[in-house]
Image (tube, rainbow, N blue to C red):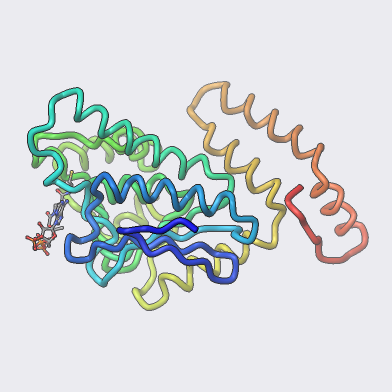
Length: 259
Ligand code: COA
């Protein structure tokens, strides 16, 4: 069994809860934490009893307040690039995960925290959440995919503004901009995430993985449509599609296996 230093990882009723556990540092992402997030996602992906994951931060104050600024001290250009590459790879593994991953944003989601939330398939914000890319305050830019995913989610106009001004936005603003799916009270944050996962659980896991892959392939070019074709075709090779169609015809609930 994998052990973690900076995360709490526990499975409950098929949901893997991944809690970043450095509350005295507002859950800032040091290298080890980033690496452990990658390990936890792999654990959830490989565990057949897990159908979805929720990433959140320990404590009342922060989801994640960014990359650990102390680890930036004295880095060369190459070392900075290497650090960003390690983060980008782990965050890409979240986005590419065939099982749904939801960010339960329970406070500050700044810098790498906003980038971590954006790498998840869905984002639910607590009303006390604050989002931002404050890197330019430090003489830096977002490096864990933030310059790209923010544009994807809220468009270039607002993404450029938030990245250049380092201004924070609250949960309602994030909702209006389309950065998050829902904004809910702090007490109902996890329940809302579980409710969404339980809804997804009733669908074909084979189709869910295909849908994640196809939607992720959107890049504004023809390539996304080609991925959709491939994934659509692949669904016809599954047992799930037979079960889904039979269940519809027999007027009963489908019993999907994910095969
Ligand atoms: N990296 C390392 N440590 C961090 C951190 C980060 N990104 N964010 C917070 N911390 C640490 C603080 O250094 C402090 O540690 P200390 O008690 O050992 O001094 C602790 O977390 C609490 O933070 P503090 O700043 O005292 O809390 P606050 O409520 O006054 O302010 C924030 C909260 C989020 C506004 C502030 O911590 C902040 O601006 N953090 C950096 C955000 C950022 O720039 N992120 C992008 C990094 S690329």
